[in-house]
Every structure is written in structure tokens, then in C-alpha cells.
Length: 633
Image 1 (tube, rainbow, N blue to C red):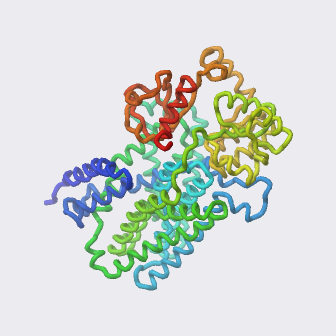
Image 2 (cartoon, rainbow, N blue to C red):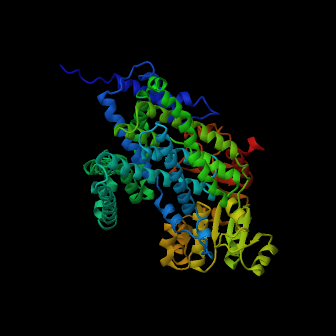
Image 3 (spheres, helix red, strand yellow):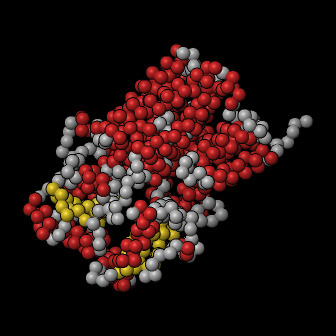
């Protein structure tokens, strides 16, 4: 008689998933990723440890497989197609040489990955020749992986994600993830079925991707009644958008299975479709999916990786023990050497740091190794060595990166760039200075800049729409760019340069042609057009005259300002526990794109954006405290 499934192993795994974050929170300086803690916890209770959880428990196997699929699905949702599309189309205005075009984030990152792939193939062939690997192609792809999930938070922590350097590393990690995932699918299909026309079936996944995207755009843009119903049902227990996302994911996973391709590509493409079709109003959907994935399914996958970890097999295999240091060395070298290409745009120190960070591996290398073991080209002992390489690199890479790229001392106020010393530009700069902002005016006309200097404004003579060395430090240091030229095309070139080359997140542009507004919005720029916006300003003045006065007047000491929480002493505390000056009010909080009305029992998190209203002096004091500047002074 068959034994019924027991939920006791599931209880152990879920309990570990609950406990691990608490334990890792005690390691404040090391800060190992939670995923590493989950793998180590799985090792402790698995076959290499206490043996409390069996390797092939039916319930856990199904949930772990689903967690793996869900992880790839969420990875696809991470892609910001609007920013990536802009990056891929970016060119330095006024330059046409191939050398200059290769300096952009996408070409540079793509070339770096191409060299990584070539070096990885050489390493794979070498390991195969030594008898330490069975298939050079699969080993090459395993070595080519990068962890986008590690690169993103590390760059954000260092405040580098919005600069040219950070953008280049983010694109490099994204290209590595996607291309490696696609090539793994092709290689596995070739290993399973041989070099037949069946490999071309993989292209049907991309055909389905395009058709589903077109259908989704038609569905949301034309069938407004259906969309309205979906909006209504998304706020009921039906949670229709969550159900639609799961349906999309399983549809592509099922299609991948039918076509005989790897399910990771299907899940990733499904996540990419959700990312393409989502709007700013879908922030709640993204949070709900992440809560389901990272709260339950994905931890089970990583803990089960640890449960399956076979340390005795590694220790018993002299080949695997020899492979471990060689694999670790190769994993670092194939990322570090190509990353030296970054020297064309950055310093040697930055290029070296970028290579170190890109050498971090985690989910994809573990998934690729598991796939290789399933198709018989990766042995169990080699799989164990690969997991150890992932654990070592994911801990060591961020630590070494932080040593090579020490945290930049934050300025009290990063400047606002005003592109154009025009009449409008000078008015904007004057009012910004009246609000105690640091302002730099850029223009290519010396006479206009002379007028700006007579008004006490800082200036820089440069072509704002070109990758001019004179403008580089100002773009890198700025937190906001305001384009004030009346020439819409010129403003667009400047905005594209700021968004794509320098990664400026906050760009505002004066747009005289209303028909050009969608182009600016697609670029991630906030456009202002008199014909479109003047009605909204009049409505604001009519309905809320005091609010309008508060926002526009500069002849009193009252101010509205946004401050980012960077002080780790504030993170985790209730708002009522934070000692802010008395003449100050927190009126709004934005977290992960979601606007929250704060109360005394609202718990702050690192990276929260607080909107403050109060006197200029109190706001400046609160800004210094919340940004952690007092600790570094």
C-alpha cells in the first residue's frame, strides 16, 4: 500500500524559509544574500547534513520546480523595456565613428559578453580536455552566467544604478542572463534531439511571444469594457490580474514543454510580456506576485538545492576536488578580463570593480547546472562544485566590489542641470536657486552663459546634446535635468543622452510640439507643454490656491521637498519614533513606485521617498539626518 504524502518535510522547509532571514540579519557587515542562507539551511537538513528532508519528496519536488519556474518568470518581469529600448537606440550626437558608437552602454556590454562567451568556451574546452567536464558547450554557458538579482541591489546600495557606469553593468548583466538562457535552451535541445530541424521549434516561442504581446496591446487598448471589468475584479477576492499572470506563465511553460525546449525560456518570456503590458497602475500586481514568489515558492526551490547538495560525492571525487578551484578561477577570469573593455569609458579601478561584480553567480548558474545534470552532461559531484562556486562568488563579489568602489560621500545637495541659458532657462534656474537648490546651467552659446553668470548662476560651456567631456562630470553628479530649449528635437537629443548614457532617472523637458509628447514619455522623460498643462495649473490654482502658493512662492521660508531615507538607523523604525524638527510635516511616502499616506505607525524602509512640508531650515536638517549625512560628517 502506497504511503500518503506527508506535510512534515514541507513544514521543515517552510520553517527554515521563515528563520533564515532572521539569522542573516545578524550578519550586518557581511550581509550574505538570503538565497545563500537558504541553500546552507537546505544542506544542514538534507542528505549532506541531518537528513531530515528526503531528496525526492513528491510535494517538495513539485513546489521546488514551480519555485524555479516562478523565479524565471519574475526575472523576465525585471526588464524595463522602455529604458532598454532607449539605451539600444542611443548614439552620441555629432559622432558617427564605430569607435564612438561602441562606447554606448548596450554595444559595450554586448561586446564584453561576446568576449566572455568566447573565453568561457575556451575554458570549457580546456576542462573537457582534462576530463573534468563532459560537454564544453554546456560548461561554457554555465561559466557565462551572471546574477542580475545580485548586480541590481549592490548598485542601488552604492548609489550607482542611475549613472553611466551602473547602467552599463545593468545592461551587461541583463544581456548575459537572457542570451545565456536562450543558448542553454538551444544546447539542451541539440543534446537531447541532435542537430535536427526540431531546434527551430524554439523560434515558435518567440512567435508566440510577439503574438501574445500584440493581442495584449489590442485587448487593453481597444476592448475598454473588458479592461474596466478587469480593473474592478483586480480589487476583489478574484484578484483577476494575479490569475491572468499565472495563466500567462503556465501557458508559456506548457508551450515550451510541448515544443521540447527548456521551460526557463518560456517562463522568462511570459514575465517579459507581463512587464511589457504592465502600466504604472499595476504596481500592486508586481508586489503581489513578488510576495507569492519570494514569500513561498522560491525559498523552497533554493532550500531544496541545498537538500540535494551532495558533499560526500564531492569529497569522494578527486576530479571534482581538482575542478573546484579551476572552476572558481575560470568563473572569475571569464568576467574580469572582458570587463577591462570598460576602460574606454571608465577608470581602471571601475573596470576592475565591474568585472568583479559581474562574476557573481546565483540562480541561473544553479539552474543551468541542474539542467545539465538532468540531460547527463553534468555529474552530481560537478554539480556540487558549481553550487559551491555560486555560493563563494555571490558572497565575495559584492564585498570586493564595495572595497574597489568605496561609497561616494554624498553631497548635501546634488545639483540640478538646466540645459539652455534661454529666457525660460534662466527663469527656471533663478527660481530653483531661490528654493536653495544647487543649479548648473549648460549651453553652447558663451554670450547666453555670460548673462547667466551675471545672475550668480554656475555655468558650463558645452553642447548639452553631445557626449562632451566638459559635460560628463556635471551629468554624472546631477540628480535632475531640466531641458528648456524651444527646439523639440534638440531637447529630445539632450534627454536621450541624459537617460541612456548617464542613466539620469529624473528628466524634465519643455516640449513645444504636443505630438512629440509620447516620444518623450517613452524615453522616461516628464514633458511639459503649455497647451496641455496650463489647464491643469489653472484647476490647481482654482481648487487649491494655498497649495499652489506653497509650491511656487520663494519669498517666505516655507518649502516642499522630497527626501530619500538613506540612514540605516531610521530603517525599520516607526515614523513616530523618528525625532524630526517640530516645524515639519511628512505628507507622503513613496515606496517601490507606490504612494502611501504616512501615519505615526508607518514603518520606514531604506530607500523610502518622503515628501516634507515645513520651514527651509527644518527641511535641511531633516534631509541631512534622513540621508545619514550627520554620521559621515
